[in-house]
Image (tube, rainbow, N blue to C red; front, side, top):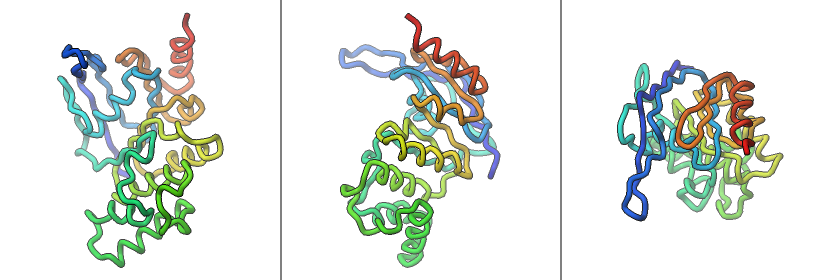
Length: 226
């Protein structure tokens, strides 16, 4: 696995409100990430999803910089709702679509599709409609599409929110076993505890950056304060 450092320097993000006013959803944030697995926790609207989108290049900072060392990686993004990223109506076609930028031959793409699906225990679903799948299967297909692009960094925004306990545990295990750096936002504190480092956001500010036990304890105090 290549080493990767993600650096945010005084990054903030403002958005326009329906009333025409500007609102700051991420206050100036400086952080450097080099661990393989980093979790981000915080209440809804705290800024954790914004952080992931800035790292992925899905949003541009109002000010400050996002940089990478040694160079910007190819990244894959996993959303809470897999239907947001499933493009094609058939499982195999959706993964094939992701492979078109790296694999030109149709036969080679089909072989790679089957390889990825077999690794996720979904080979029997290759010709199924994505609309026939369970939530857990859809999320695994979304992961398959990300893996097909051979990313050097994976970002996941509350990826197990819509999954039941068994499927959530399986999906978390698969994410944690990826051989590339992973940064994920979650409300599941057991999942967060599996990271090497945890960032805590509150009202658009980074308020804690520590090893999991200490960071999660701080988040619990913030979340449960009266």
